[in-house]
Length: 128
Image (cartoon, rainbow, N blue to C red; front, side, top):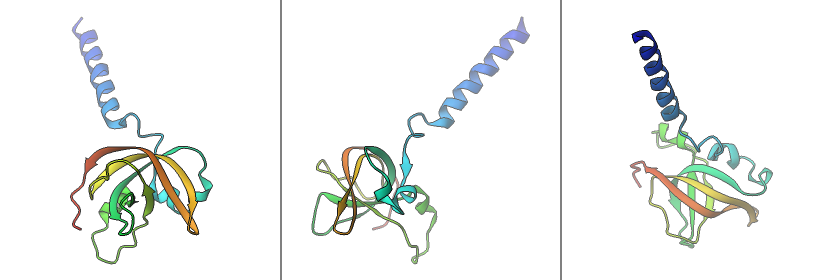
């Protein structure tokens, strides 16, 4: 009897750990480094995960997001790929890790990601 109880508790604990590690809902999101090299290849509505790293000086609705992996680069000479995002809602804070749902549109010889929805996942303290 104790043997079955221990096995059941072990399976339940394993299931809980697996659910916590997998972070449901992130598997369908693309990272900035994946889409930034060829944004024109992505059509339709997609989800991109990135960190708010810059703001457009001439347009308060446009900001740039960088890949989450770029947080590991701490030297001043890092070449961080930024994807420009246009969002008509409240502007996120510098360092906000975002899940951005939207579409790429041609803009000024490049592409702009027009966001329909933004969700702040957490904030990373960035010096800016």
